[in-house]
Image (cartoon, rainbow, N blue to C red; front, side, top):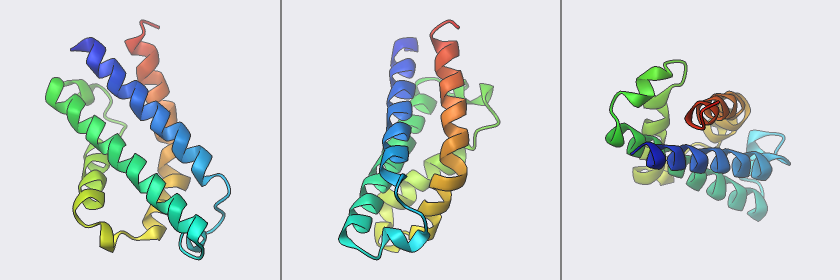
Length: 122
């Protein structure tokens, strides 16, 4: 179980790096909808956010108390975003995705890096 939790967090970290890489040239929320490239970036970021949420849900199922060790992370919101993307994609707001990329991804990256360090015995 421990190894599987570690793999989930490694995947989450990899997804964060991909989101950062894809979001790099986006300067304004409308950049995500004003061109075919922007729409492609929006779609690819949304898929990675969905995957992050899926993996958080998997960790919660593997060990229901594990996420409680890191209360500074909004796990519930991450899992809810996954549900929104999965079940209400047509209503997904590009400004919300933009704000997540600007405000939430950098702090999540720091937290996930710290969790991985702990999982790796550091």
